[in-house]
Image 1 (cartoon, chains in turn yellow, red, brown, cyan):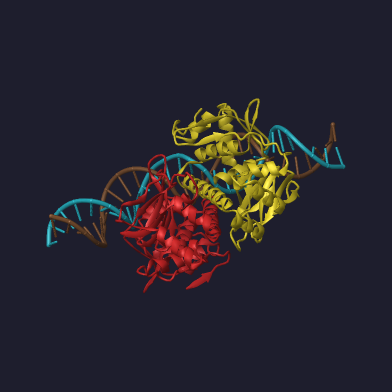
Image 2 (cartoon, rainbow over the protein chains, first blue to last red; image 1 turned 135 degrees about the horizontal axis):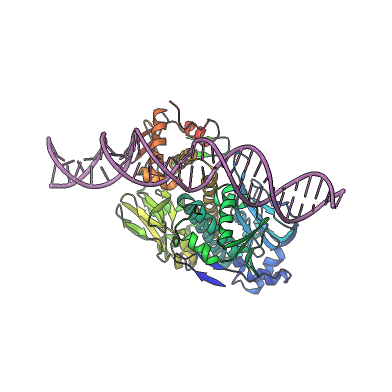
Length: 256
Length: 256
DNA sequence: GAGGCTCCTTGCGCTGGCGCAAACGGGCTA
DNA sequence: TAGCCCGTTTGCGCCAGCGCAAGGAGCCTC
């Protein structure tokens, strides 16, 4: 499933990742390791450690020394950043196959975010030093890593721009589309965002309040764009959200 | 000059960069090339092309294929991103010694921003392919590049969080501090932000309007925090701005 | 199945900041 | 020196979205 809107917002549902594959297969499909010769891949695999994290516990906390790079193989992880006042912002929500904590590829950094398991999760990790070692030995990984990071930079630049210039409704529409493409799962009614996301979480991702999120979502539900549940959103009519995200509809905030 | 506030906002004035150094010296001081052995540095230098750009013209435009990585050696460059509606957002303003267009280190990307010379500028650039070649041959560069990118990711994550959660006043204070540390020049009255920045530019950086920026700046001027001019801001009392940026002062928006 | 915890909804009042319009003024050119 | 261009200031009205409070509804535990 894939469509493209006027300015290039793309919604692509990842094939649901089978998580019981042997590690070597998973690694092979990970962007960071693509194009590596088998020997290198094996070296990567030998350096990997597996780990588990129960729902609600943390892979790492913001401010911890960034000593490990993680690859999620099972579950869901929320990457959040704290505000000085103690509240927090949800920066990314990731599923299996996603690399996180990649900041550890740079030396001497602290994790800028916390990584909390939204459900029971499993992953593998590499020590920063050993992964850097691998990068030095297999420069293809360096190019891959740069691509990954470049993509991340672009994403946040774009989200920054959105937040700076666009209305809440539009930002929320984009956020849902992004989530649907990243962690969406096709169900009977539409695309389920397969991650327990509270209204508060969505508010944090879009720079607003849970009240406003709730209001807008309910508006959309009456229009048939989405189906709502407790910590659940199903996108029924993505094109409708795209229409909101773009300029195809008048920003109808209040009408009978 | 350097101080540190409660949550780690750091203001460090770069030693004013002498721009007439030989290229080899400049390269040596650039983060991307630090730690390279002389032979590698020479290879880098051989692959570099020089270029000029008059005030108001562009090194590249958003959407162009990202084929070159630039290092600014003279002048000032504004990195902006367009909104669908044609307006734009100023993402970064950089001075000599800064690398930009680094997205070209990843393959097949388009520049996500435009790079406009704010004044007559000069720089050197490398073709994407040849720089990738260099990265493959000198993996230390790969680590350097990852550090750079990681830093960039962190910066935008943090700015995203700020924009999502903080009031305009505070965002503007942070933006000025950031600009002062990046492109600040010590003058008699304080730290001049050495870059022709309109109120509109500041508004774009902080996600607000030029009116609001103007109002807040004037407020600060009467409080003695800054000195204002046409396309000019001098930070007189950085600690005061830090106090605004943090929670040290009541957010006094309107008082006699 | 009762209780309780958490998340969600919705009404209401309010305000921070937007948007416009008009006037001002600094610095350039002729 | 006059005039113009462009950036800036400031007043005013307004509304999108915030913040709170009260009530409702899933879902879990016991």
